[in-house]
Length: 378
Image (cartoon, rainbow, N blue to C red; front, side):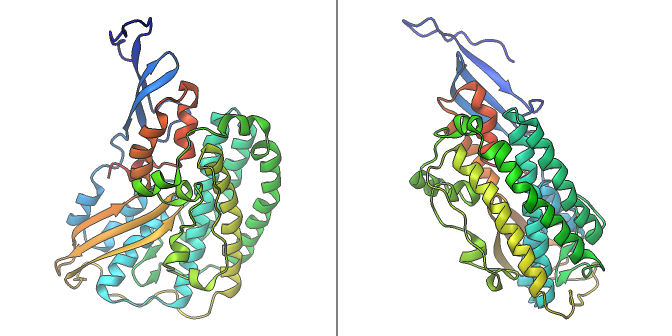
């Protein structure tokens, strides 16, 4: 905490204080922090401080070959890394004119939805612990480990995978992967009613979140909000449906929405999306076609991508993520830029919603927005 500011108001005995709600707090995400100006326990102003984690990745990409950048892009979001791999691969494929095999598109869809489930469970751990539901938080984190086991079996890595790349995926599904995935999904499906009984249907959860930090539909659209935060205001917006990629056009799923735009609605949308993702993975495993899982590409150290520029987008666990890439005809990107949903949610939306909020609600308002700090300062 910094020194109190001498800003006593005329006619009032209040003193405005500047507090740093910092990364050491349980309710913060990674290295994220918020500078709060408060009177009593009421927030007057809030300024987001995303920190310096993984800074400068977009510039670093200009000095590495296209294939060397894959270990970088996945680290743009620790909780949900695979969408960034898919974005980068799609941008390279668009510029190079690569056609991805159907089997690879289905495998990408499976990986992306497993990553969404993993991210949402990670969110549930943080949100539950912040509101005092430690048991629920530990359940969610423990169940997330079953998803990480699948990633380890498929890619060799539990958190960062470097699996989706231009032309398809790095390797085909290993023996036993389908059975192990279905087993993990069945366990998670069985746990969802337990989550509801303990947390989502709990009166304490409702009292702490309903009517809190309301984001209106018009305001959300004006600020460029996407993902669960936008769908919580009643807007049926999902890139997987609106502009399908991978194998999403072949699969049947609903876009989950709520109407009130408060912390409660944002949390329920995330909870319901876990069910939809389980259904999508089941369908993809059942319908996955035979054939190759990748196509042959040139030597990665001598691969010169044709001149041009492109913008691709997908639906990550936090909303619409886009990637802009410019090629000058060499073996390295000339420019690379990520459009992350956390930038809008973590700065514009969060700072607005915290005005007038209670100090006790700062952490849960931020977590309800499902922010990933590394996506902001790149």
